[in-house]
Length: 463
Image (cartoon, rainbow, N blue to C red):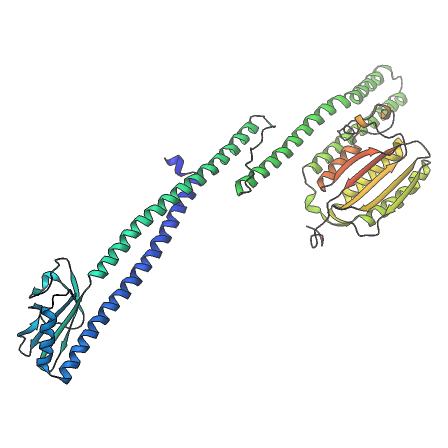
């Protein structure tokens, strides 16, 4: 029971039942008091009307006529629900249907057992509002039954009880149903997270597509698990790639040092081999630094540096710098920029690295005479940057692999590079919410990056 009461859904259902019950109780209580007050006022007005009529007779016709009217009303066989008592100045009984009631001031509730019933119907449980009024030769008591008031009050209380019981039962049942559905989703989330904690990274939370809060939480958890799975797969892939691709240069480095140690005949030969080994080490260090940079980017560490970036200005600056580099390699660099503004939220330094890597990749792996084209378009979703060439291109079955860390096409093994350039491009594009695709330029390669459009007012400055 204690474990059950600690569950949020169960507590919520109990709170719902309490709130509904309290609301109904407060509402019916207000109705009860208002209706009781209204009925009491009506009874008192009836008594005052009867009294005033008798006082008027006393004023106009005299005390004897009042006594005659009271006597007729007291002996009437019709159920009038009124008590009348007329006494003279000495307090002696003159007329009425009750007797023996002492004098009092103001309003008083008299029980049937307090009355000396002279005539008329008697109900042991009845009570009366009563009021004494002085007359010319005595005093007059007029009272009226409050039985109808008691009936109404009893009916309201009974109705309140059954309505409250029904509403609490309904609220409890509804709350239990809501709690059951919520607890089912919470258990699904708990099972999925427990499975992921045991290494089952493919486990996901089953969604009900109800659109409620728990469903949105499940969606966010699944997105987080997807991201976590991708990161772990990348780490595994990186470990494999590092072990595979760095095994060769480390082996060469050891072999050079071993040869230098065994065969160097003078300091000059030894220095030459050590210099070559240092260059090999520099290449290895650069590879590890690039891998660390990619890991930092994929972890989103640079997102806090995002600010408004105008892609047109950034691409213009990059192309101006790399046009001479392309010309030195015998290539032609063409730029086509949209006239519309293309603003995104991003890190200008990383975006520069992205576009520079694409240009250097095209210049390095394409033969002389290649035309490289940089295009900026205002797409329907957001700005698109396209870098295309008419070089040898990338086979269709290799396009998904070129973004893997340390992956290089076999024909590129003889060219400088670590195979991390396009991995860095993919990581930066993903950090900025961009979608990168490769396609055939017939001949050559087309690299297209679609960036999301910045909502109005969100690109005003650094975040």
